[in-house]
Image (cartoon, rainbow, N blue to C red):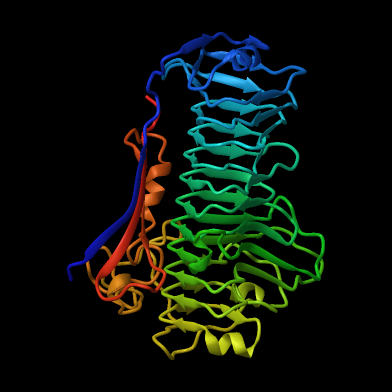
Length: 441
């Protein structure tokens, strides 16, 4: 079936262009701070290979500047030494691109006007973006924790795409678009991720608790809580599509059963479509008080594959109360091998989805019962126009196009399309939002 595509937003951010004033900054102690303090709006600071030590000094960026390597062969390392870089510019745009940050420090915003954080590496660095009044792009970065607890807080409205957040404690984001990211965390408290995203598409969320066992047995734990998006998109339902949710806990768990380990908590009226939720590597006992999908407000739950909760008494889908159950649309899902499944009404099935493997969750052609078994709505068809396949490769937002952007060998621009569905369109008409960002060369 042909489709009418409505391109509602397209933005191309090109990095690497030389500004009117560019300065080469040599490595050393204090050299970066001196260069930042002397910079004017629009300047480009080109960093050479070597360590840039902050020592005892914090850095405040109060003009819009670009900081990037001198060329693609340069490898600048900014050693924070426990200090803070504050992005506080009230004019222009500040860009941090292809830099390595280390050293138990902080990077935060105070009153940044516009911000691009692209292709950087952050090791043991706390990131906190709380106020960006203009555009904000956080794309292609890698963060990891090797020591104590480090959080990522993107509580400014940033377009967050193609990042790898590894071994975190907590991630919170008020990004309207949270697309194609990989998030791994081992926080042993209640909720690991809070998202206020209008569109959470093509991500992988992994809660790995083998190295950090929860200590409070009589408690509820959640991988991701999806909250109401922020203005101006707060009138739309959160659209949560083509994500993978895994929970790992195969080692020694708590002495007593925990109450629950929900992968997804829908605390607002949401659309949860074409996701995979897999508990095959989670062996701890639970009381199963909440399902792997916990519906806390009337929502649409369609074309998801929920499996392997039987090891820990987890039902596939549960509801806050009977009113929420009645008001919600739970249809065309495959719930397999759970403490309780999703029944056989409304297009739901309870069958082995027959994956090629449990890494990419591709359905086996010719034998999977989940192929062409999703909703029949035209705007939810697969990209080839056929009926929706259940799982992360079905529908208009197959996860493979987003996971491909995480491949370190890719040199083409980052491209993240999102086929929007807020249940306002009909027939074969769909809206597309896309962003393109050039990689550093």
